[in-house]
Length: 158
Image 1 (cartoon, rainbow, N blue to C red):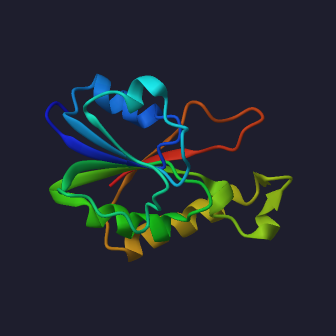
Image 2 (spheres, rainbow, N blue to C red):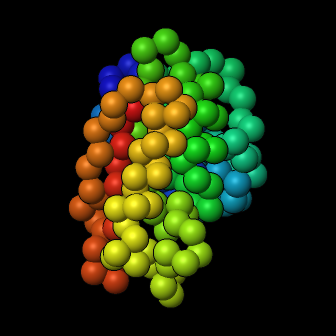
């Protein structure tokens, strides 16, 4: 990622922003609808362009980027991925964190968690939506931070 320009959609406190900077990214556009949540150290890094109070679905950047990372709540992948793709330079990639709890239908949830018997059905719908958007076969990896009292989440590289 050395020398890349990147956009992080749904930055919040800046977990992905920090990872990108540590791996040599030359510039990161930090996009979030909130205000004041990005870590102070990241906010003051000259390589970070802070775009607060900005909806990732409608963001416009002054340059195409090599990588878009996505970690959004309440926005299904079928809506955010086209917005992420618009930001990419030719040959660019998207790394998205899929949160099944925001993809599930109400009856597939129990107390805010995806019911175990519904998880594969929810993920199949997301995979189908990704294919319908024209992305090639993808690699899915379960996020190691999930489990326990948390919803399982998955990284997808497009």
